Length: 434
Image (cartoon, rainbow, N blue to C red; front, side, top):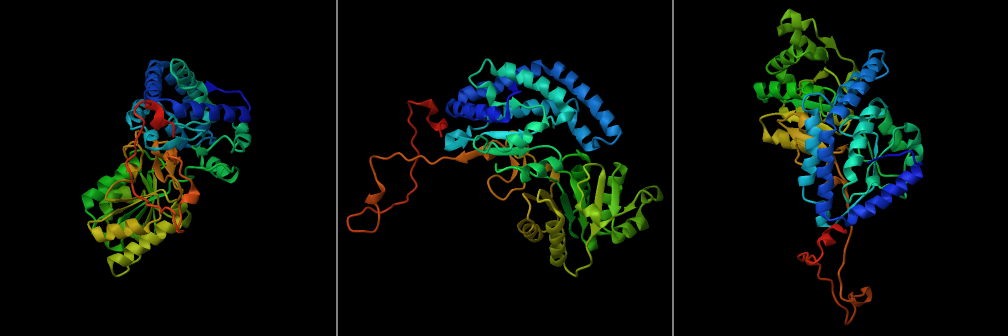
């Protein structure tokens, strides 16, 4: 991984050339590079965490005077329990996946703007320089070109880099919503990602109460600044007095601020202890369009509809109107309601009886993820190694030509039969050159 002070054009060309080398490397060589990266990063842990502590100190000062959000500050900390271990395990998990090149895919040239598992931007420059130095040292002893991974530390080159569609195949923006929207509006290169994680959970009337408490507390409090944390809670009117109070009490005890509509506020005020009821706030319409990335949750009760399907349809309508198409979930005992919800909600991930926090590449078995896409072409949802591949069509013939086939006299007909793929056994790389 190189720290680059080259021009955007030079960076893009170097990456494109490196991708051609990667395309013909055997799986063993790629895996050796990943193993080397893992080992060297582990050896450099102390230096990297020292650099990260420097970034955290400066970021905390920026957050204190409002120049940086608390959610970004929370994601920046590499020393947070499990963060470092998860980052390094992700490298090994990708190494242990089947090489997607073995199934006739082609590697693309990707530009990450400007983030990795360390959640980087200008506020994490020291961390990334330390990580970049370690990875560069790791790649020197492998067959992977150093230019395969390049770190650019200034944002002023982004506009020019976004114009390099001849050499860059895909942009994966990781950062603020403003950054993602800017990139989507200023490049011809395909963009994979999402600007917001406005996730909702709907409690149906027949949901199991204890499960609702467990799932919703996890979805809101296990990592509030994550893009898959729940931001809006929708409640069937019939569940307001039976299920919702237990959920609300558990959330309030965890420090969650509940912004409730009129009906849900009245339901809680009537049953909660005074010390908790005084913590409740009234919601505004804007709350249902807000990704809080904190211990704040918007709550909306659905008007009485007379039957479960009508309430479900009202929940779906709200989600499809306000959602960012990231991840939404239903809690219900009814398979009929669940399947209707999953079919009707227009999001990348739609869950039944599980936390929105399950929307994650590692949890899906992808090894790790580069992001979650809300696009409706190419990859959608958590994107792992397979999602970064494109197809290449290979034909092995014996002199056939198009003019020989057709419906005329003496012409051959197309069979279009599925045939077993045969790989030349004498060339290990043959399945990787696609």
